[in-house]
Length: 609
Image 1: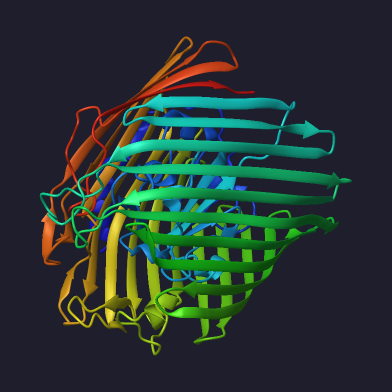
Image 2: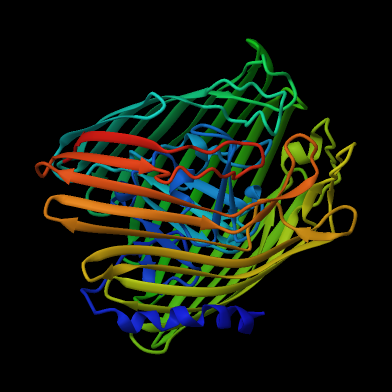
């Protein structure tokens, strides 16, 4: 499998020889090992989206941005605010873990994060670590981890803001203030977004859907305060709160019915960074994540689900020598769910984590082990064994074997629509081989992976829709990512070739729904004086899905979508930007029966420090 995957990717490995050297890129990441390391040294396939990358894309929300990345597919039910799912490395949406500043903010019923409500205006950076990393983060980190870091105060205190207006009566207003006041760092911002939107469901596929426009409103508040206490200690508070109102459609209540939802998600954390000894760094975090949602049908409350997750995390790193470090972590999660379907449920989990990251000459070794104990189903032990070898200063080989698990959600266990309290956790094993070429700001990485699932959780496709552990599922593929600059043009590219198979309860092995065999992206940006012009192309091959009305399997056709972007820096602080979304007005679907955004124009004016 690995040999075949690398033969597919071989032409890409010749590409770096065309690139000229530039100053060394020493970007630092933490998600791949839960300790600081250079991005070029990370053994898991890791990428970083910086504030500049986010600004170039002019994307409003997290799903729109992540669609460009290798190994990630995103599906959304309609426009802004519609339920969104991430599929990493061919896995299901609940097999991808999303963290906000290290904190879980998830729906305890579905085991997913409402990423459709995470706006990007006050995000500092995003790190993506692909593959089995449950040995670092616990349940759900099968396909990988997406970690969102909110903005911190830095530099001279100053205000910032942005006003956006565009198609479908879309408006967005952002206002913020941040900076450093001696030993204190502060950032606070508020955002309000409104859009009339478009009809989420195409009535030609679902005649009982309401054909009216489905609007969306998002009001977000983000705040961060950190106080340094001498050289070795820092205390901080971070808060993120988003309230959303969503209009949406369904395919069965009738064309005159009106569906709406109010959702309140957020995160609050207190942390203490300390360096007790020269070689011992420690961080204690007490946090709470929440996801409260109420759904309405024709003005009357139809369902609700309220999740509160309390977390206590103690991370420690001991530098045995400058090249060798040991990490030790203790975590506790207490999760409560009040749901209109199956009532009140609680669970807690305790975990201990041990890791080693070291370098000896050209050799790098990463070892991680973790043991999780759950109050409702018992324990799960996971590991990561990773090796890197520097062939030259630019060329690097990587290999790893790892395991991961996903705890059954409350919906899996107790839903009146097929819940099964006897479910076991999903488990997976992954093997990887990778090659990287990194020189200056250029980086090409090609990774072949093979993941096998045991006790994968799925529901019967026919009544009574019982949830059960099927015997196995598997995904194999190769993913390629590139970032760099050629002849003055900044480039990002991604290509994924995969084969995701799931064994359904009828014992027949089928291609996984909404996961394509081939997909990729290309983004290019170039400066001309004070102007910056760019474009991004998103493309995907055909994907299997289920019919929105009959639930029969079908195939969605492939698509290619082009976005064009421009930015003009009037002064160093005042800027104007424009985005032509879906420039060719391509009609396509990410989920059968659900519309995607037609051509739209959005113009922004902003002030930045």
